[in-house]
Image 1 (cartoon, rainbow, N blue to C red):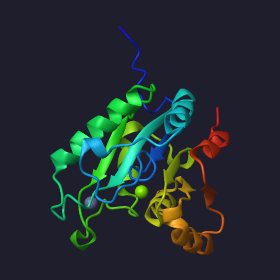
Image 2: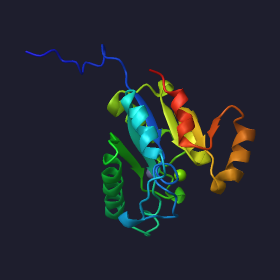
Image 3: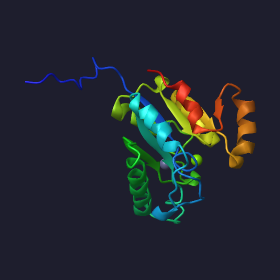
Length: 190
Ligand SMILES: [Mg+2]
Ligand SMILES: [Zn+2]
């Protein structure tokens, strides 16, 4: 007989690196819907591999309102995700799960970022301690999603998000901002 090492009462909780999809995991294209549009940013694989090798679960948290808007289907999104997994697999990076909100703002759903819903769901499902986890995003809604869930936000600054960054810095002066994903490596706790 084997001991049940999944017994959560005794096991150490997991840590996760949560990742926004568009603009973080893959290059940003508005309402991207085809696998051939998937492009992995330079060095992203190396950086995520470091987090993964340090024991962090990699979990994607993405709003895909293009589904509710009728721009593409849930199946199109699955094909894009299969391509993302395939590309990252080549560099040894594995995503534990991908959480998707398919709604648009007018749906008033409970899952759309900045709601903490998807992070809490991931936390329950994978026994993750959110206060020891990080969320890299390139939108204010990512940062607020992390804050609302008690997770540590990291804001990836790009030319596209300079205005957001200014607003963010005013509202949350202590938020960690980076220009390169590689800057996150020093945050890894072993
Ligand atoms: Mg994004
Ligand atoms: Zn939703």
